[in-house]
Amino acid sequence: MSLLTEKITALSIPFSPPFIDEDVISEVVDTLRSGWITTGPKVKQLETLAKEFIGCKQAVCVNSWTSGATLTFKWLGIGPGDEIIIPAYTYAATALTVIHAGATPIMVDVLEDCTIDPEAVKKAITPRTKAILAVDFGGWPCNYTELLKIVTSPEVKTGFTATNAVQQNFARPIVIADAAHSLGAQYGGAAAALAADLTIFSLHAVKNITTAEGGLISLSLPEPFDNEEVYHWMKLHSLNGQTKDAFAKSNEGAWKYDIVTDGLKINMTDVCAAMGLAQLRKYRDQLLPARKEVFGYYSSLLSEKEWAMIPACEDDSRVCSYHLFPLRIRQVDESQRDRIIKALADKGIATNVHFIPLPMLTLFKNMGFKIGDFPVAYRCYANEISLPLYPTLSFNQCVYIAEQLEKAYLEVI
Image 1 (cartoon, helix red, strand yellow):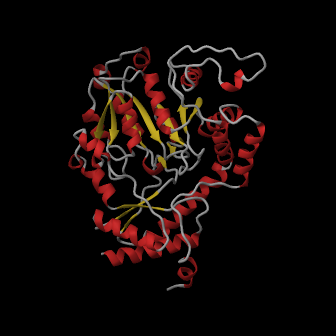
Image 2: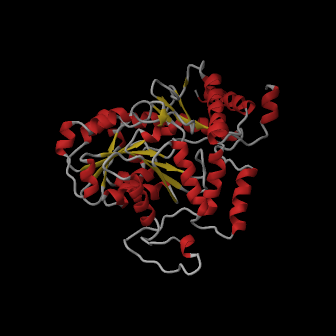
Image 3: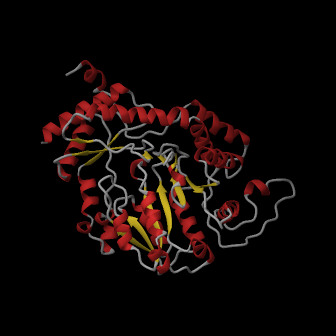
């Protein structure tokens, strides 16, 4: 046993703790002391900062990624009879939002890099297809150039059936980025969020930037859409269709309001926004580079192991957000992978698996989906282990994780 191993063995290495420093605590305390804890000035500040960071036209804060997708589908007028194409390899929320909108999720397989397969998308499009919901797996952007090429092709546009004004303005299926993992990712030298027609981020507790629970819709819609107008539509519909939020009503004599539409109740609170504000202020210069450094540690430590398949992080057009280190292990099956995870847990190392493919989950099996129809998704899942990755993870901890991973692999194989 090395000295390094001796020092770290007794420690517990969590999988993805939230980044909570004194700046985050101070920002939350400031909110609590202000006397205003629900939607108010901190939410607006977070939207403004996110808009500047991404370079988008508008940013809308909501209380989860799921709410962001629900609101987006409401704006698009998605309902019964409509189809949304999604990858089979994703978290359940991607499909559940489609189901809750009354539409039908159409699952397709993924590529070996775990992103949605454009050729499979092309084959799945019908006149009922209203959107492609593409998932940036682990922060690695999908091939949006190819997806947009497909939906703007003459044959797809000719077959498209619009049922409302928003859909008529697109005159084709919309490409939506499920960017739950990819805040900070790059595509073509710009924020990856700008590559799709519309992008939805998660600000959940384990994400690169967290508001405990939260979501963010990035708007950079093409003409003839007015992004400011869409922003106000979404803010109205995120708060019960009420013409004034609670902060505006709190002003003296400003109590009177109206309900002008069938809105939802999915607004973000200032207490939550305060966390995200403090983190986003240091994300570009501190937190994202730290995540990249940890990703680099793993890549260096594992790249010469013949059994280790290093995840993609950069190519000619894409740079990932370093949200996950989704290591795939050659020549192991699902059961062996699980034994490796157990061996790591016994050494105090928490890992995860991203994701159980949707067709393997009871709800979707009961809907008729079969994992045998998605062989690449299953391969990606069966030998994948997500290693701990967060800004405060040290090089020595990464060395320890790599050492124990190799030992576990050799024991299992």
